[in-house]
Picture 1: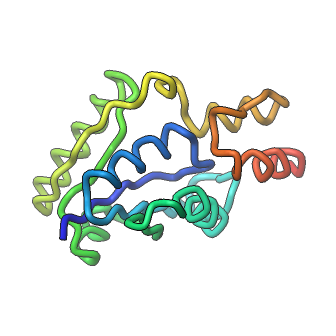
Picture 2 (picture 1 turned 90 degrees about the vertical axis):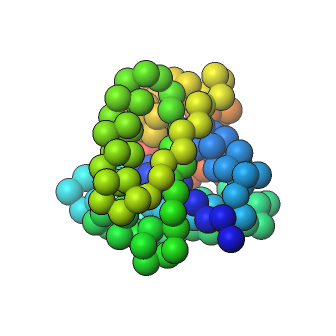
Length: 159
């Protein structure tokens, strides 16, 4: 079975994330969307909320599973029998950072990294930008899945 992991914070999941996940789901037998647990970072949504949103927006894909991880991605890969990572690249600046991570992951555990260029419609998107726009009441429809918009607005209103 060809299994791949698509890791990230997904705080919140964007249409750019979903584009990469859906494309990977057509190429691999199983795509594990792994939500990073980062206790040093202040997140808008809890890990459980992010996982639930991801389950909702990927429900149509029968070969996508949502999980969580902390620590090294290569350890998560080893535990789950995963030999490759899929990462979306928005710009050259993404590649510089991701290439270092890919080389380290391969050096440590022979975990390969597959890069996918992001759909140009979403090349400017990041979760942090979505949070910032939503915080000031900007319209993020078309940038995040419909299932996420209400949750994002409600969370921003609470803070």
